[in-house]
Length: 340
Image (cartoon, rainbow, N blue to C red; front, side):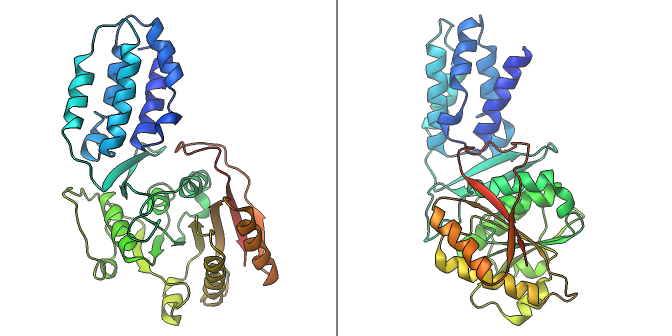
């Protein structure tokens, strides 16, 4: 297969494994290639790099997503004069016989060759929270972290509002932190977060799993022997965090993604950061990086105004070079470094 066709197939693979919107796929390029090709080898390659990829077979995206993707792939094939491709129709028939679930999987390929696999909720809002899906700011923050791994290497990292774990798992696999503390408050989110950490081959510290009930969802978890980092999951309520919790955390670096979206939450976040800085045993303030999608400029400006009001400095982190996870580049995602 020509290099250009291989690159096109890999583009389909990265988007499909992470269940990116079907409109983001390079369909016009595929159509053009099929018109000039005398066989179906490119379509077969795309099929095996997507729906039939071992990761997707083991950890599949939603039935609706797979059905929509395969239907579009078949349309592109039928628009050519090539012979019918039985494997496409057999795969579609198999998917049509499956029942839809409230959960699905997304697989993100890392530059190291490893992957991050997440069990997510199909619905954006579920069980009273938006924390059961991965948002673009988390992908953006992970890309920046991978490009700036020295910020995290051999340091204790605390993530506020970890959600279902993408950013922390990606950093733990690529940036060699000494310890990583995932945190959230919603019980369902904490449970899903814990499952996803274990799904990716990490073993949590014993005190983490004592308080969070685990559920395998019928999947066998393969545990690899990661020597580092030390991973924990903390239940943190920013408004009522205890002195003992603050003393126990002691982070060198604090990160958060998509937690600046409501004025009330913004004030609680700033208060939490002040407390974390105050309770540092060595008196040295932690480095703080907050990533967020600017959906409402007023909320963004209010956050910066509140920081100014209490004397916390901030600076915008320059955009990183590499696009690894193919999120919507039109999303207005910013990373602020807070100077506490």
